[in-house]
Image (cartoon, rainbow, N blue to C red; front, side, top):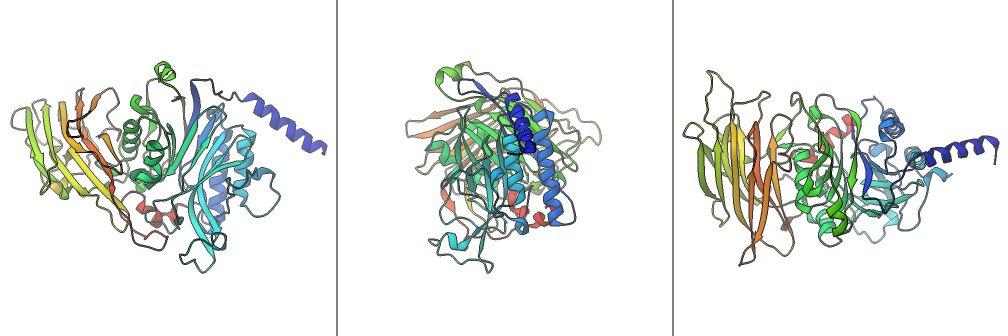
Amino acid sequence: MSIKSTVILGLTLLVQLSVQASLPSDLFYNAGVVEFRSSAALTSAGRVNDNLNGYLDILASQEAENLDIVVFPESTLNSNDQATFVPDPQKSLIALCDDAEDIYHNLLKQLSCAARKYNRYLVINLTEKELCSSVPEDPRPCASNGLNIYNTNVVFDRKGQVVSRYRKVHLYGENKNSTLLPEYGWFDTDFGVRFGHFICFDILFYTPAQEMVDKHGIKDFIFTTMWFSQLPFLTAVQVHQGWSYANDVNFLAAGSSNPLVGSTGSGIYNGRKGIIVATMTTGVGQRKIYTARVPKYQTAKLRQKRSVEPGVISRLTKPNIFLKRDYLQNYESVVVDLSKGNSLKQDLCYTNTSFCCSFDLKWQSLALKENSVHYHYRLGVYDGLRNEVAAETNFLKNCALFSCVGEDIMDCGKTYDVDTDVIFENVTITATFPKTTEGFLLMPNSLRGDDLMPVAVGEFEWSEEVTKNNQIKVRHSLNTTISNLLAFSIYGNYYDNFVPVEGDGAATISISLLCGLMALLLNYIL
């Protein structure tokens, strides 16, 4: 070994020894999620280099010191023309930092070295390529270049080895392939935590996300995403908190940061205890790591001991962000007449179904000044397939109060950028939901207009009770006074009415919901 190599190795060991790694016996681990704005460089290679350097700068930063695991977001590293092969960790564990062959892209090798240098687990998302000839069991047609292209999570351990690889199952508007059979991504760590991981649109489906909770008992999850927020029920942090709370799991979400086209939202969540840290950024976006000390889910005894520091939320001064709108015109809805008294009790059922919701509202009497700006509100019920265009969909049951900027239903799902005069003192929603054999998830869902954050855990009450006829009676109640409320609902996601999109393994391109903007934006962003 040369003197130069010996010095480099010695310095690497010194860096590793200086990092205080968590132990299996610790009640907490230290995590970071990165909100990352992709490069605007003119060439594809230039964008990849800029993004990679941005990743490496964050990993080397003081904010990232002493972290056990760092997560970067979806589709902010490379694109189809800079795709890379990724080793299969089920066949062998490879530290790409040591790999002398030219098979793998330089970005993989550098990130492998960074994971080793800083002695931490590293989760990235990238565009992967695979030879169709390597999967002869797949009967579907292959592209003319002989390659499958995947949206893939890659996990490095502290040695720089690839220990997990997951290819996105539920594509939305992406010019990518899906695997013949769904894949599952999970890995074990040296600090005693098993992580499951999945990507963006996967969160709305049973396999693999919900299945890892229900059938495999995983309690810590990693979510890489390029989420495109939709009012009033599917903005990013709103969805993160709802999924984490309903499943009572730790949830590490890293989001792509380009608010001007609707993409932002990162955070770390501790199940029924809510947000530890979260952000919805504005304007041109950012490259920033958000860190937290995360309580472990291990045994009932340890869970009693765990505690969470008060949540840290990055507030928006103005919601300078593009927001999509749900198809609220398909809801059965009624106007809340705020000028008549200060309370309302009403039952509302969805057309031609037996699904009904009960609402109990109380608000402060309005004393609006002339030309005052205020939200109008509606009660809404929906029972049917989610409105998706050329993509997979499943069944939704939703009881909701939501805001409007006018009296017409088409005015709903839109926002003002100023505070309003409507103050709610109570919102209570109750409904009975059916149990199904193929799984479902009932989530508390809410959104505030001042910061595009959900109502904090502790400011609402949530209860579920199994009835004599084996249904679930749910109560969701606001227990604080709140203004600028955009949504408050019981959001029931049902997986047994899953409807797949037709295709040959590659998703149909669309410009509709959520991740569907990705295909149109990818060339611009990357």
